[in-house]
Structure formats: structure tokens, C-alpha cells
Amino acid sequence: MKKLNYYFKKAIKNGFALGAFNFSNLETLVSICQAAEKANSPVMACVSEGAIKYMGIDFVVSMVKTAKKQYKAPIFLHLDHGQSFEMCALAVDKGFDSVMIDASALPFEENVKLTKRVVDYAHKKGVFVEGELGQIKGIEDELSNDENHFTNPLQAQQFVQKTGVDSLAVAIGTSHGAYKFNGEAKLRFDILSEIEAKLPSFPLVLHGASSVNQDFVNQINSLGGALGKPKGVDEKLTHVAITKHNVVKINIDTDLRMAFTAAVRSTLATNPQNFDPRKYLQAAKDNVQQVVEHKIKNLLNSKNMA
Ligand SMILES: [Zn+2]
Image (cartoon, rainbow, N blue to C red; front, side, top):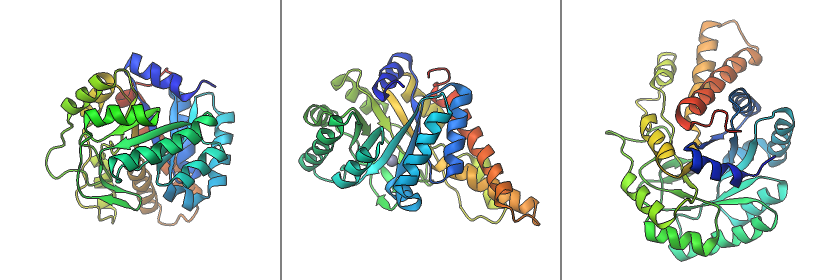
């Protein structure tokens, strides 16, 4: 199988991005893989530290190993928001394809130091590393951050030179979680262009880019849910970042959770006599797969890029 950097280069050249889809159960992982297979698209299957805690790292690794054997589509296992050297090193040792070290809450020099330590360790074993500079607003697992600190383009250049990271998550206005914006969502394409001027052809990453499908929100709310009015990033904006800029990886978590939960609620509501998890989880799988297929075709442009 070709390595991740092959697809990053190809993505910049061809104006597509890899979907980095989070999973925390077998159903979601299988749905991601089946969608990738059907669309002949490369895909990243991501786990956060919270997801690892929930499933156990050996289950995570074995499931993805099995998926790689079963599907022709390139599937990469990625650690999302690794918080420490130890966590990243564990993922490297266990056979992940790529790890993210998120030291973005630390002062610049400390972020550089910790990220470089992870890069030195991971690169020895052929594992790719994503760093983060600038802070992305919102809630990611148990991490919450109230303020947006946009990435400084000059610092981005220094960060990449000093650490040797393979890709960089930048803060240009996307936000983690389901409740991204009160008003209209805006992305700072001006900052993105400045970063690209300092780092030509360098792979960039956007986190917190779920679009939060209002049909799912309404479905969940009408069936007893109480989500209020969550709001995401318009896919048109993210699409510009992918096709006109060097964004090669888009993280998507909330959209899959919404699709999953909407299907479970609706199946249980329409079949109140059902107590077979296979029935409502099958519906969840179908819904998640449809969302991933939609993202691959309409947002990521990664169809037939395997
Ligand atoms: Zn993130």
C-alpha cells in the first residue's frame, strides 16, 4: 500500500482532501471503510484518546488491521489529538500509520519541543506526524477551548522547519463540536493564503469541519432528543479550502455521530417492539456510510483517488 505522504502530495496536486473520520465502534469503522471502498477513495480512520479509552488500543489496531486486509481502498489509522509524547509513542509502537501531537495549548517553544520529540520517535518507525499551531475553538473529547487563536503564518513556517512535521493543523475559524457558531460561519482564507505563501505545497489540515446536517438535528430533536440548535461549517466553505488551497485532510466527527444517533432514535421509535441491537445498529451503519459517501463525493473530491 502506498504511504500517506503519497496521498498528501496527490491531494495538493489534484485539489482533493482525505476524509479523517473518527470512530469509536466497529459499526462506524465498517461504514467508513465501505464508503471508501465503494468510492475507490483513500480514507483516514481516526481515534481520539477518548475513543482509545473506550475501545482499548489493541481492539482499535486489530479492527483496522482486519479492515486493511478486507478492503482494497487505502485505509490509514490515525491518532487524533494525542496529548502527550507517551500516547503518541504508544500509537507508533502499536502500528498506527500516523499520529497527531496536539501541543497547541503550550507556548510556541514548548509546542516545538514536544512536537519535535514525537517526530523524531515516529519518523524512525516510518510513522507520519501532524502538529497543531494556533488553537481551534470548541470541545474535542474532554478538551475544551473557549477562544479561537488563529495560526500565525510566520510561526507556522518556523514551526514546520523546527519540528519536521509532515502536516500541520491550522486554526482559521473552524471549531470543534456541534455548536460551532452563533452567527454565520466564516473561514479566514486570507490567513490560509498567507500560510501557504510561507509554506508552499505543504499539507495543511482542518479540524472541526463538520457541517452538522440540520435534517439529522431535526430528526433527533423530534424523537425525544434535546440538542437545541447546533450549527456547523457550510460545506461550500470547506470545499474552497480543499480545492483552492493546500488542505489535504479534513477531520469529521460530529457529522457521523449525528447520523448514527438519528438512525438509532428513528429505528427504535418506529419499531418499539425491537430489542435486537443489530436492527438499529444496521440503520446507524447505513446512515453513517451514506454521510461518508456524500463527503467523499461532494466535499472531499477524493472519489477514484485511491
Ligand atoms: Zn480536532
